[in-house]
Length: 77
Picture 1: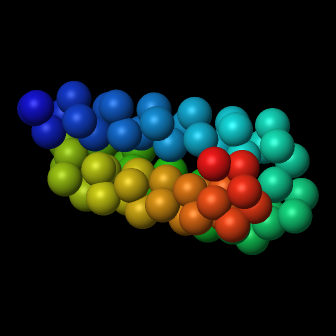
Picture 2: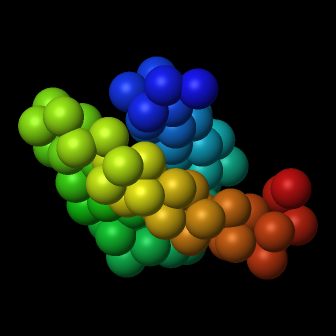
């Protein structure tokens, strides 16, 4: 898969899981986690816009992993 397409998909995957996190109201319980994740989301978008798809992919996946861990901990996944 082309790196640009992969980065796009992973950024969208991050957007989707943030929405799930908020829908479950976990943002109220873990506001600092959501702040960190949003910072990584901004980084991912910044890297993507600069054409650094590898770093965009990495930032998005790191943030996804943080939220995924919380969902597992909270038994929501």
